[in-house]
Length: 169
Image 1: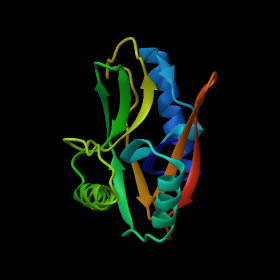
Image 2: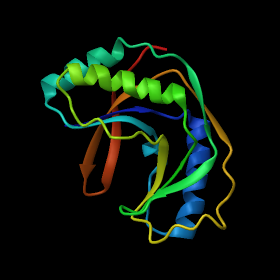
Image 3: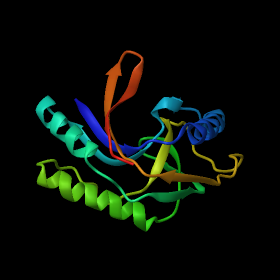
Image 4: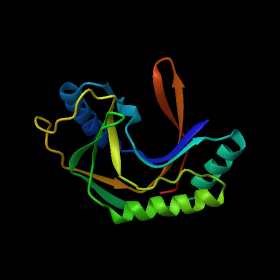
């Protein structure tokens, strides 16, 4: 099963992110991410067997993370795959959380730590263009206190996400 660790936005923030995705889609084209799929990835784990997924779910369920607040204040893109996102500048607390998670994941035999961590929420995939001009200003605050282990289930309608475990809050 395809897994990742993420912060999942509360419903009010998810709605606001969805509105930004609508604005970006109207301006840039591409494939808009469904509101239910909006998240901040902390660690993409890729394909994981059921036994290891169960171990990860137990581990995540026993975790307690330090609460934090992330400010989303800019648009960005990864041009090659056509991803349009919103995010913020460097965020030491999120970087420490991501590093700590990968430290444990590697002891559990999982690899794939990225060379750099760019905290962001993907709004569009395969965007035809990316132009900031005409996009609304972004000024959102995301208070977080929980991580989730998410399974990405891909079918003929695209990807949908299912939480397998959440940390304590």
